[in-house]
Length: 320
Image (cartoon, rainbow, N blue to C red):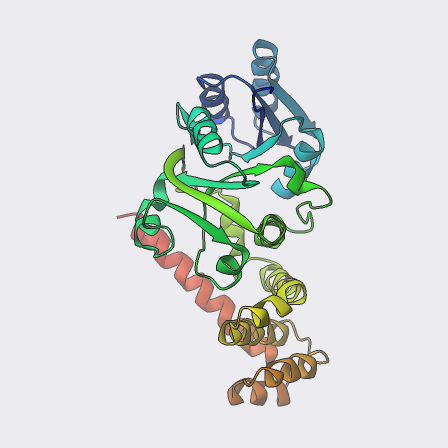
């Protein structure tokens, strides 16, 4: 039996200051059967030149350049199309792979075989892992229902069989909202094995982090949030009912209703009002009043203002 090969995928945009560290963390792994696919998503700061030089020194580093900045989901999809490993690992350009990360992963896959999806720890989430009832024992078998019901949330280091990605790709319309893709992967894999050992150390203090694009005051953020929420409901509505999680489903419908109001989309609201009635819940009266008054823009202004105030507050707090 051939040793497991990993395809480590890194999208990068204007990370000249840290991309060499990112690459070096992979190159120094004690387990050596890997390829590191780095897709430069239209960098303008010299990241591409640095990666060209690094790839000349390391044949396992596969560097690809996208001339236009299309977002990390586009870069990840391009890398997925190139991947030749049996397992996929996503690894951000501003993170550090632990020195024995791949060997840790191999040991877990060998000892706990039979899964197509493994989850490992990232350093800044340890408190969450230790406090979550499903994760606190250090290892756990998770199910698709745990994700859609919110019993497990947030970030992990993902190690997935490449076969899971047949016919599944990230939605390139959005620069974030990977949840759309991961929920489908959880559903396809049925079970995921979690092992609480750190394999990635993360940097989440950067001001240019793409995760900040979810703030509601950002351009198109409410529109995109609405589209993503609608897609999740369309794809997983029946699953919430099967799991008996009607209250969570109702909460998601109300959230979609709010987003539609804020986007000035009134014609589709009766459909979702009927959907929530069918499971024994309702749309709050104040939202119905806003609908009658066609006051969605006022709701949007309030949401954007609140989001911006929170953002400014965090900036001020971080400066002390």
